[in-house]
Length: 380
Image 1 (cartoon, rainbow, N blue to C red):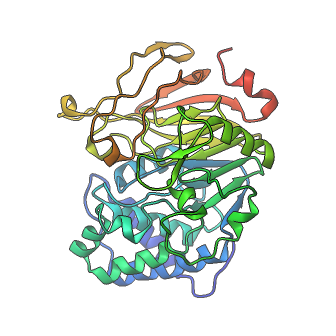
Image 2: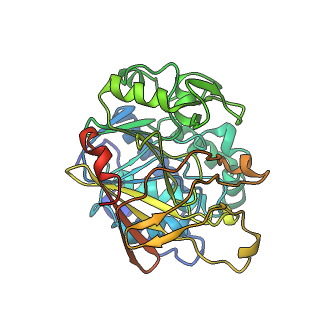
């Protein structure tokens, strides 16, 4: 394991992790302000010691947005394995929206310090003072501690890496591509620490979205960054000899959603997002042979289910998985609040195997290689 000068004592870290893992049932975990400050300071040192474009080897589990849904983060580790048993890459958006952003980010920082080469954290658009000042994290820090602690977190976030490359074939980020991005080396050259600018490469990596209804580049309904079409994805992958783009940033009903003939996948790991959607959450697992499967965290069935915003579709379950007709995710006028997107194209072919257990589903999809893509991503 790598060592960083001034890293917290292992016994102290293990005790913090133990207390955080005991925080089930929605109860707040009692950490001192001093302990949290040490987590921020030590994690920041590790972030800056590692490259802005992380080079990661499979096996790895990729986790999308958590947004302060701490109980769901615990479910992720329960089913996927606790570090260092399993390796993880998180795609950002750890804070805001949910009720336990502090527990969420503290556990991830503690694991990062304890196992710096086993767990990797990317920056999301909510790891930005301008955003989390508004959407909940600032208020949670102020209510439970003080504004000074929030400022320490924002400084820590300014050191986070922004992208990862898995075995030279899978490019991961929170948002998406940028019209300024031609070569991966450009990501390495982004200086840290840095705040998120209102435009440009860093902004796009955290904010942009794929759009099935455009070719090339288009303005985003978010009012920041841009959207990009399937042609942009195909050209970028070919130019950089990549197989797949993996990103988060948008809630999708199954926890994952393919785009552009399975050249891009969106992963979202917060089921029942914000208590307002009946979406599932997902993990993407990639093994040493780049064989992939999704682990699906099923949404709970809350008492107010009738009030949930629906993704309107008709699903037929078969022994092979799900077969769905052409659909459009129907999100009402609050969609922009939740960074959701509409889907008007025929969805990609469903996965070829499904194994269920308790409230998790594993769907195996096969190998990522370009030559195999047309056969392994369909029914056998």
